[in-house]
Length: 249
Ligand code: PGA
Image (cartoon, rainbow, N blue to C red):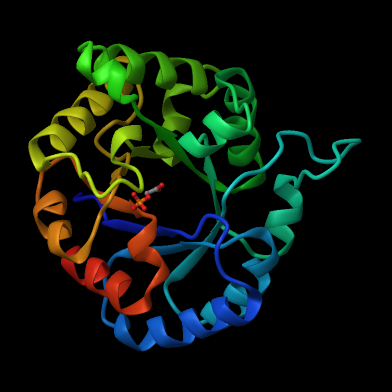
């Protein structure tokens, strides 16, 4: 079974409710024919507006973070059941901006990934190396360490329900995309690590993220182990994002 392409727009801290609604209304007619999974990741405040507009379409909605507990004294946090109640289907976990600016740890991710799965949310788990790590030829060591730590409490079969996003930190928001060869090599390595953990590695969607644009999407998505894209900047514009969705077929 070929893997269905998975194209996600991570809006980060962009778009009000009104802007989110405008984006979705502009995007939907442009991607009506797609066979891919198209996912929009708005800020919490715009989740409902996007969910309501995409009913009856193939578009899925993901949050950008969640807490691992169902409820509790965690000011400022949002839980998996709260997202599920809104009809959100997925959640981005471990984005490098959360790791870097908000102290997201592998220990927290080891709790969040199984909590998301238990609640019925599809985790989009982000991993990726810094520029220093790549220069020191530590890319594979970093990826393996993150994957093993973050998936420690997810048994092999359940890993089939996780989407992995390979996002080299040096390529995020920099305009400096990994070459298709670099991205393919890292995604193939990630698949090997999953296979070693007895996961159904051939079913897992592995995305590339980091300065994906309409101009480079087709070449990246044409590589055998790159099953989709996690798009930041170009995912804020409906025309650009639609081009990337079309590049996936
Ligand atoms: P970018 O962001 O496409 O703007 O580089 C990617 C991401 O952070 O997911």
